[in-house]
Length: 427
Image (cartoon, rainbow, N blue to C red; front, top):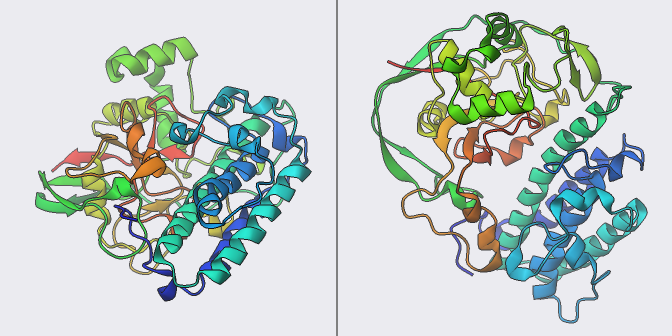
């Protein structure tokens, strides 16, 4: 198998792959532990999926792309699941319509969990019998990274589900308030010139992070932290949502048609916001999140700044360690910039974690990009149209999953993810 993705090399260099497989798979089920069965079957809008569906889909991924290829006479748990839990891989067949996933009362949650155990048993047996197969190691590593993406989606999706309930129930009642010291906004200068971006040669990366290539940048500045709730409140009080001159044409049309007047999850009184811990007071020092690209862009224009390009962001991030308010800290909500300090973080705070950072860059291929061969080529490449790039990860991203070259992407009107912004300026 040839691939633009880079796994950790072969299974012979990664004897802990079976252990890692078990850890990631258990984590997905653990995320559902605070949920009732009734929570796990709800789909609150077409962009979200029920928790039950996520658990099944990531199992289908291992079954379809690994077990069916490596195990002779693999005993499918239920052949009908191939239709129900395919997401968008048309090269392997048709699938149940995405907006109708919430109508799948059957299979039940218990059946989905049994399906996961079936897949896990066969996967562990396969890993034990193929300890030195580099192609298998690559596919398993890809599948685990895919599951980590869905773990993040499980949290953002259930947040949206619970927010539709007038009772505003918490996903977890032990998350508490989100306090911490703020940091004064300042700008850090970076030299331009010929730079390189894209994945380096070590470790696993997705194909859309490749190949590493040269870019030409002018001198630029990035804000030392993310934009806060308090700063966004000032934008609101200055009539930011009623000034068409601040908005891109598509953004202004969306604001009018959707009647947006504040970030998603903010209360109408602007003094609280819904979190995975329930309704909490709006902390002015907490990074603003759940903004669309349109809102981020309008705020930046109002502030006399702009959004960074993804090349600027990656050059500024450089070789900074992946440290910050990521899912392992278990806050599941953005924190003020001074709440966590990490050795070697440099002048830029919150590069990783807290909120995904919208960039001004359209999601497109790098020069010389080649998608994976076969059906897995549908993973990233076919979405390179009409979406915008985000960088840095969020408070529900696994630390092992993000890096400076990681390219997330969403449509510009998407708001249900933990998406915020960092200001940029020309130097």
